[in-house]
Amino acid sequence: MSGTPLPGLLPLEVRDAVDGLAGARVLIVDDNRINRHLLLALLERGGITLIEQAEDGQDALALMERFKPDLVLLDLMMPQMDGFEMCRRLRADPRWKSLPVLVQSSLSRTEDRARAFAAGATDYVTKPINAVELLARVRIQLRKRAMLRDLEQYHSRTESELELARAMQARMLPGSDRLAELEAATGIAVQAHFAPSSELGGDFWGIERLPDGRVAVYLVDFSGHGVGAALNTFRLDAICRQIGCTDLTPAEFLEAVNRRLCGLLPSGQFATMLTGLIDPVAGEFHYASAGSTAPMVWHPGDEAPRLGDGSGLPLGLLPSVSYDARRLPMPPGARLFLYSDAAIEIPIEGGESHEVLDEYGLATLLALRLHEPDDAALLSGLLDDLTATGPIDDDLTALLLTRQR
Image 1 (cartoon, rainbow, N blue to C red):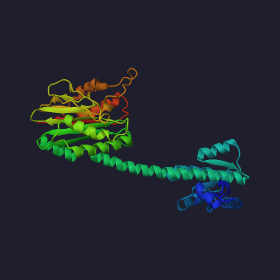
Image 2: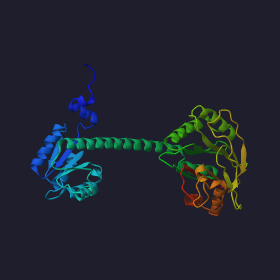
Image 3: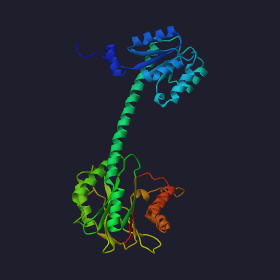
Image 4: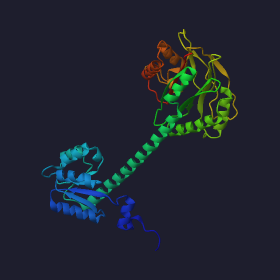
């Protein structure tokens, strides 16, 4: 009968390739020459041909770097260095920490097995060797080794790609040189903190000096975090750059962003966003909010910050949404504090069930720090207070903008 043969009837070399054993390297460590030759014959019969031999632990360790085995077949009772000591030395070396070590020994007591596993053995068979059992255990350990290597390579590749994405996300945020230029030109000093809760975050922010002297600022917080939320930040950053904010009010800007974003986000995903203009001539902060946190402004001489209104429908839910124009006074010396909701959703340790910090709790913490003249020290101290309040389980962005003149 023609057709594809059953897996059990495949030629041996084909089965090895399917099992991931082709090219597997095995190091036999045994002081008995007859035992070594027996193991060599068994392995070759099983289709494993890349084999090295060592007479004791010292000889084997000297071969490790050159041969780089995928499995060690190890006897325990040997001169110079026994199998127990060799196992301990292998596990002390990070390169061989996960290398399978299959012990084959005449020691059959429970305490001997326990001692071998404590030294770092992966598996254990007793002599006299059962050929079928030994080959089965060798194959199992080599398959596990191959799968672990694939997993490590995947992890390494993923880490490299995540590092590239982190770098791209970091480039989206204003750098220190740009903030220094902004401060010199406008008198608006900015201290910023951005900390994703995982490898990538769903928060981002931007700030820009407009030709008429006003300063535009926005802060975005996407639902969720991680890779999915980070991809959405790239989408929204591109939308913001395409629209621009020179000729639009904050409310009009939000409406334009929302219309474009609704066609891009998968169902159930959304973003909160606050965008505003600091107008030095009028001494005001004009802003609009799409379900963002309440902005806080502190005036010189005040004992506590003033809370704005962060209400509004989040972006990406309905294409036809209007947003309200709002304003807060911002005279010279005023400080404006913007933040993502991670700062107000911190569970209060020792508080009632489901009790979180909330905006008024955050305003209280901020009020205790407003006497600090140095902006960097103020923001750093406030972040310490938040960390002491409870665990922060979401992306956290915090901006402190001070009007120096």
